[in-house]
Length: 303
Image (cartoon, rainbow, N blue to C red; front, side, top):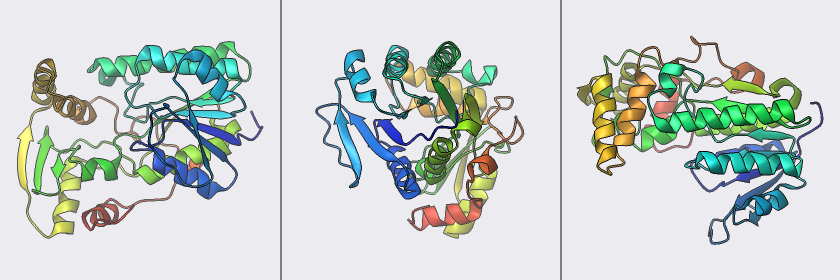
């Protein structure tokens, strides 16, 4: 596929990742950007971004997708049935490139995806996209694996570090590397993928700003804050089992334990450079330094 992908629609766009993708697409200067939201959405977007509404039925989605070259799914908690509906609508509307709503860890590693039912749904959704691309001429996909959003995760205590209390939860021995990517780099990756349709057609791409262990992140945080942090260690198996116990009681915080057990579990394939490599160079992503990015986050700066 060599034809330009000029008209881009984001499914969602007001969440964690949407603003970074919109910023990167806008900076590129070649895209016509639309965001599809539900009718009751109060979200606003920068000038030049067209806001569309849909009740997310298939017929409404098809109508919204018509004339779009690419659709990027940013619905974080969509069900498998919903994701299949998105794909079916994209195919029917003649969309050329579809980027599924993954933006996560290694969905190709069986040990990783076996941990959590949500991962199984994502694998099923990606296989559905692949099957459609194989069966429908002109319909293509790109899969993106980026690990945790480093800046968002650090600010929200999601990868075991609390910036306010300066407490760290270390999973396992803390020496397992796991790839993570800043939101801005994920946004740039999406813009680059759509700018290079032939090079990225029907591929699963791994990207990473860096691949640190938790101990390396802790060292960067202690250097940036000038303080020694309080450390609590949790075994990988314990994190997963305790997480599931919490979830069974309706405590959604258990999701963090399960996901961190998955992220830092040895053999789960989340050290992207070691497990097949990354596509940073193909996508022209900037080189980022763990210590510099961590210090900027601690100082409240955008990265």
